[in-house]
Length: 352
Ligand code: SAM
Ligand code: SF4
Image 1 (spheres, protein in one colour):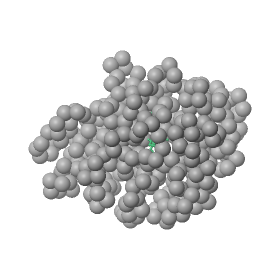
Image 2: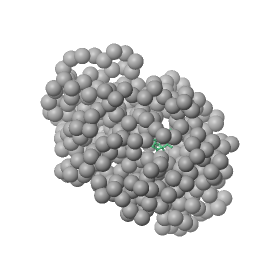
Image 3: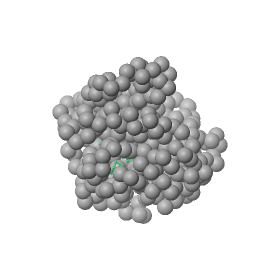
Image 4: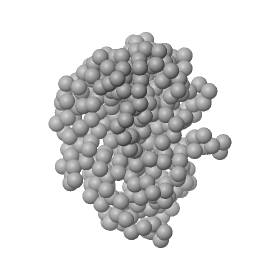
């Protein structure tokens, strides 16, 4: 059921890799255990961030290829009860565009053991939905915001919605979705002079700021290493206004390296996937909106669970195929290898 992307799916029953240990969890050959499931609820979006997708959008996934709410809930259920998944992060595309969002959240929150539930959103519509999301079971929220300036927001997202995002952030904080994290991507010559302003805004308003290095996952394949703002540059710019000291709290599988801001308690995180990869501690598995398991954002293979769901395969067998997929996880994403090939699926269709 694992396919090289772009080739027709192989048909046939699940295969158990004989080398894989008899461990119910999602283990791989490098000793890592996946306990964090990232779920893409849709590939659609109401913004068009330049580093993510083209102005005209993409050919969205046909509805019948997308998992239904019940199919998705079944897969999440077996991940939590059979595979040792402890954390669920819902993302997309824009997850708030998924009609059944509250249903999927509510069903996830009712699972045993209760998983930790978080959502990554662009914040459009969050102001009126934050309370309902908290009530449905969301524990934590990440909101993407790359600039505090209206003209730049429009340049980057190709939409004039900055005030919606700012209102959404405040509503999330007021709904108790703590910590509300702000995810920012800095682009050279566009918003790279705003690092310190974004951090100051987050500290003043009780949010947690995180910067993400731009990754080669845009649909247009326009990423250029020389254009990317590195973690080193981000820290230099923050250092001009703040004193940063490494946070001693254990990082675990968290992608962000964290620093205390002016002695704390405020912290800032930097996700340096390109210049300081953290693959050795990765604890993730991913499920796309069309039911494909991916063991890495940058994987060039995926495993088709939707065909199994729709083919009447049992939970036990699906769980075993998921374990096989994780067992085959590569050591690292290979962005820095000369032979690196950007995956066909863009970030918006994988779930960032
Ligand atoms: N639409 C939601 C949002 O923007 O938060 C969720 C999906 S979006 C793909 C998730 C995160 O990925 C966002 O914080 C976004 O800034 C980030 N992202 C998108 N494309 C990226 C890229 N090429 N490199 C780094 N981060 C990227
Ligand atoms: Fe949409 Fe998020 Fe991609 Fe921006 S980063 S276009 S909000 S999916």
